[in-house]
Image (tube, rainbow, N blue to C red; front, side, top):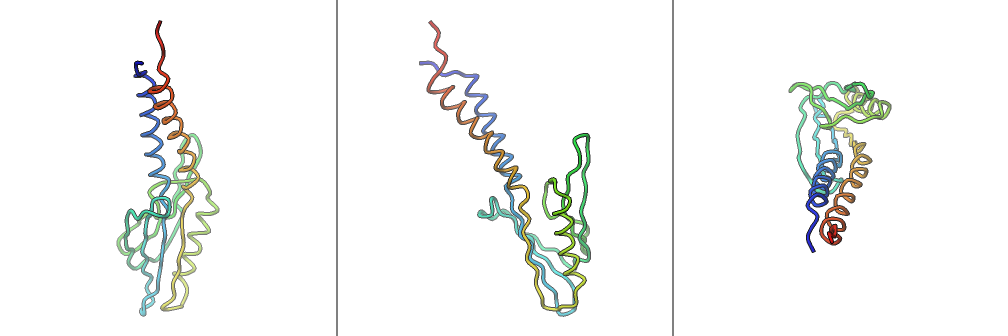
Length: 160
């Protein structure tokens, strides 16, 4: 039996694309903000793959505003939340997704916390809007596995 090279390559390409999109969109961002005694807002952003495997952590000092950033093209617009601090503007996620209302609500919660007078208070939020896209990319992974294993290795084209 001879392996079908085209099916193997096709399968590998789909597997790589599936893993890539799962990694990008499978990132869950946890934001934890607190008020200092001086009334300044400090935030810590933790990013986990599928909400389980820690990927990175970063700190935002003296956050004074959150807003929704928009990216538009011929297919429409997508959005993400951006925090403005003494270090400049930094996005909460590395990607844009649909759902302006949910992003606006998230930015509103952050701004309400920033504007509050409760020193020593905390705010914890989670941004996981990319999980649906990550689950959809599982289709790429499954198609790739199907092509690689069943069409490329187990059932190659028979020439007689």
